[in-house]
Amino acid sequence: MTQLKKQDLINILVEEYGWEKEDLKFDAKGNPYTNARLKALIKAEELDAQKLEDEELIEEESAYEDSHKIPVVCGSSGTVIYRSETTNKFWKFTHFGQKDKIPYGELVAMFNKYPSYFYNGWIIIKDRTVAEEFRLTELYKNIEQLVSHETFDKVFQYPIEELEEVIKNMPDGMINTFVNRAQELYSANRLDSLHVKRLIESKFGFSLDDNAPISDIALETDTGVQNIIYVDHN
Image (cartoon, rainbow, N blue to C red; front, side, top):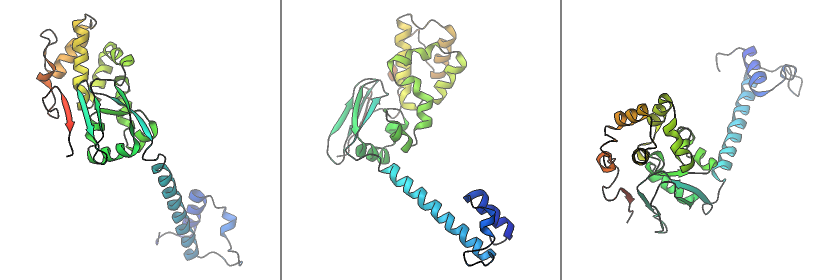
């Protein structure tokens, strides 16, 4: 700002902070505005803007009380367990699509210490405000078709290019769920596209004809015991 000319400083106040040019000719005492005074006005506007931004952030962060219960759904076909460090209460999800509610404060603690629960799609938050706060909006946009039984099966009817994009953006923790469902549909003769079949087999390296068990392609994050993803804090 030290190199800016007087007209440049006036332009900043007019274009960025809504001042009128007429108001920047003379101050309240009738004295012409100097460069130093114009810089001081810009600085004051910047501080006001930062203060407003901070107030908005505080308002967003305090949108919910810690005890407020947030709806969540399980995105895994295996068993997912989480135990609270503060209350020892635990939540157990045994199948894909299972719904529950978890206190906001507990979700914050979980996200801060074990973000994989969310980034891997093991637990999916069904509250837009919290999803935005945790910066999960983009992830959820990519997997919105995979979070309910109603829409999941329709994914296998997508054109190959679209299905490939879904697979590309799928969280690691939802791969088991996706492959399990592909096996179920194929066994029930409901996966009738040869192109879809070949895409799934090539992407995940197994044969639907052989009905390869899901454990053959299980993620390293699983414990290997009945597909349980288990975090014990004690």
